[in-house]
Amino acid sequence: MSLLEVSPFYEKKMQCLLCKEHFPTTRIRSRQVRVAEHDSDFRPIYINEEINPLLYNVAVCPHCGFASTEDFSPYFAPGTKEMIEKNITSQWHSRSFGSIRTKEEAIESYKLAYLSANFKKEKYLTMAGMMLRIAWIYREAEDDSNEKRYLRISRDLYIHSFSEGDHVGTQMSETRVQYMIAELSWRIRDREEAIRNFSRVIESQKRSTEPHLIELAKDRWQEIRGENSKSNK
Image 1 (cartoon, rainbow, N blue to C red):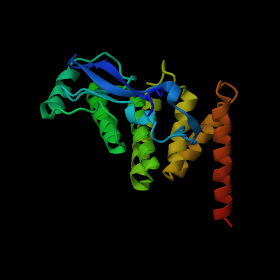
Image 2 (image 1 turned 30 degrees about the horizontal axis):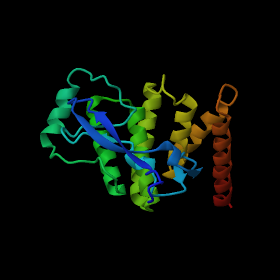
Image 3 (image 1 turned 180 degrees about the horizontal axis):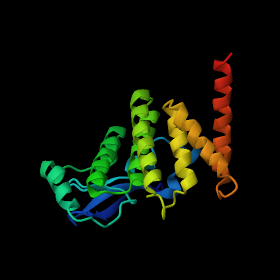
Image 4 (image 1 turned 90 degrees about the horizontal axis):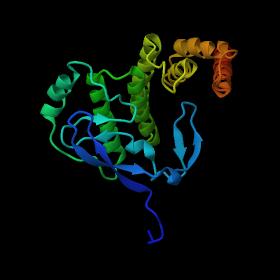
């Protein structure tokens, strides 16, 4: 890299939500990120695989082991801090995730964030997003079995989010949550759940403000019908 070139990576100072200690974590400059296209479950495919923001979504506190994303609430319900300290901090051996990350380190950071979110009682929606990103990283690594495993976990969490309504007040609309349930179900070959939810998405088209989702759902619906007609021949 020449002196005139700006590194895509920069160091961001964080304060742990749990222990309040300060620590650095690596981020990627948004202007350096180039997306070529998106998969049908919205995984971004980056032009330069080395500049992958997915690997840096989670900040891991080296002091106490609490891991979080920007979707975490600063609020801790009564008793949740004690649960985190008992189940994570007491077993934590200080280490840093603050530098350039491998895919394996990124996956580990998401798993730590999921544990932290679970004990903290974060939204199902937040946890679904983290599990989906693990699946995406495995997809990039062409690890099909682990991708499917985490797609299923993510799908089940989206179902909980929909039934509990914890997506209300977030950037995720009801239609988008239903689309994610349908799309992930289709990817893990749960046809019944996929058909049920794609139907719901298509039925919402008159009141939906997301026509792109409706079109994606219609495309998938045609694909499912095509497979059904082939299997019936």
